[in-house]
Every structure is written in structure tokens, then in C-alpha cells.
Length: 352
Image (cartoon, rainbow, N blue to C red; front, side, top):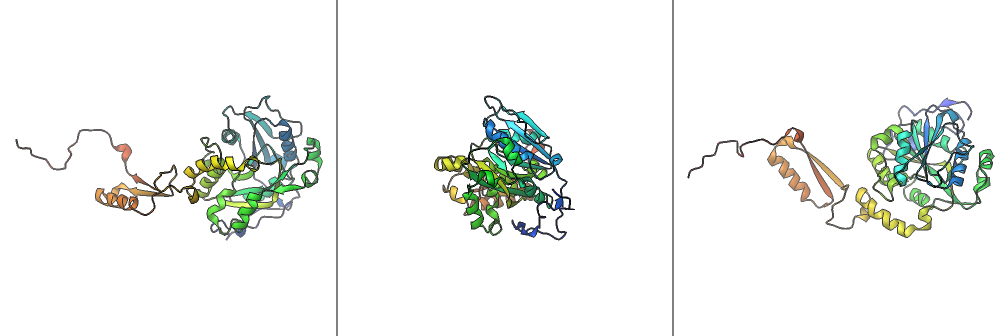
């Protein structure tokens, strides 16, 4: 990367909804970065693909001293190893709890960067992918940036070839685009026209998040079998995140995705879990009388208004036309302890 001006957000920039076009990222190679990034790579077996991913990370245009890579071996047999071609600041840790969310959470706990960059162990980033992500994060601390994935069926080259090739398209094209992402962007005007669906962009294959925002939101839900990325994206949106798709951040997925191979059964499982946790997906909540883990409406009522007023408010909310609602009553409940007390504030005389 050539030396240039530091990336700075316009002093008057204000983002409404998910309109990230209010920000103007610098051209690749024309700015001076300062933030560190931790690339978290959960992996289960697949040593050959992991070697290619690390080789791709070793050739990034983003400064090597600002890139930390945390590879999380999630119970591989034989155990994974770090190949000779990798970024200098690369570590290998293990996570005994099975499942991608557990592995990602272990990597998150070990990461030290200002930004967390999720990267699957079968996605080889193009030369400028990390830089493309990071130029946005220098503009605002509440952004979630996603790469454009391309799915390649090309024969995997040797790691040294990946590290030495200037344009990975020469190795992996022709490739298929991430059609789901393309369709989402077309339906939502690049996520700008429908901000309520923007959180769907958060997929773990190649997505980056400000570390402080991510830790405030919380880690991935290990109880989910599928859809952990989307569920975390929803919580990030609730915390105020803005979601940015960057076409200059490209990643080559080695082979088809799991959803491309078995879409119907995967949707059947993921929809069952996602419906319970993401109220924005209203079409998945067709049962009129069912209660959900995360309600569509959460109503908070303070108890200091008195019994009659609080009861009237709660009764009115629960009698509304939206059944997917939960009520939380806030009061000094932790100060109440079991004790002997009269049921009435005035003495009651009992005559026999």
C-alpha cells in the first residue's frame, strides 16, 4: 500500500437507516491505515484449503504488522498445522466444543485487533480484500462490512502460487457469484432502501465488525445449529450497526457452499431456529398463538406509577392485536425479601 492520507469520516456525515453512501471511503492503495484487524478462521479438517487461505492472507495489501490471524482448530483429525506461507502474526488455537459458533467465539476471545474479520477456512481473500474492509472501519466504529464471495470449482493451486499471483482471478475464474447476496442487494437497493433487512448481510464467510461493537453485542449463539451468523447480524443491527457490501472486497470460496449443495434441508432446519430469535422474519412466524424466544415487541413498564396504572397499561398491551409481544415490569424487585407483613394497610377487626 502506498502512503497517503489517513481515512477520515466527513465531519457532518450522518447515516440514516442503512444509507452508508453518506461515507466516502478512500481509493484502495491511497491512504494510511492505523487500525489493527484480527482475522478469525475457524477450521475443521481441510488442511489443504486452510493452507491456501493463509497464503492469501500473507499477500494482502493491508500492512502486515496490523494483521493478526487466529486459526481455531475445532477438533480436526489429524490436528491442523500452520503452513509455512502465512502472515507473521498468525496463531493456532484449539476449541474442543464442536460447532462453528463455538470455534468463532474461541477466536473472538483470543483476538486483540480493533476489528474482527470472520473468514471461513475455505475462502481465499483477494489481495486487497482486507484493505477494502478496513478503509470503511476507519470511517466509523459501527460498520459491518461484507465481501463479495465467488464460488470456484477450479483445481486448488499450490500455496506459493496463491501467494505470488497478483490477481487471483487468473487462478479461480470462471466462478459463480454469491447469488443470494446479489438478489438481496437488488431487492433492497444495495441495502439502502430497506434498512430492516440489512442485517441479513452478516455472514461469517468474509465479514468484518468493529471489535468493541461485537463484544458489546455478545458472541455467537452456540445453541443454534444453523443461522448463527444471521442471528448475530440481527443483534448487531439492534445495537446500531450499519451494513456495507463492498464489491472491491472479493473472496474465492473453494467449491460450493453447504447451502448450495443442500438448500432445502438446510432451510428447513435454520428457519426453525431463526424464527424463534429474529422477529423481523415475520413470514416465519405464522402460528397466531405461539410465543417466541425473542418477541416482535418488547414493552417495558416502570412499576413506580402504582398498581392500578401499571395493571391498566399491561392489560391494554396484552389485549392488543399483536400477540407476539412481551411485557417487562421494572421495579426494585431485588430489594424485596420474604417478611411478615399485613395484607392490608389498615388493621382488620375480626368478630367471632
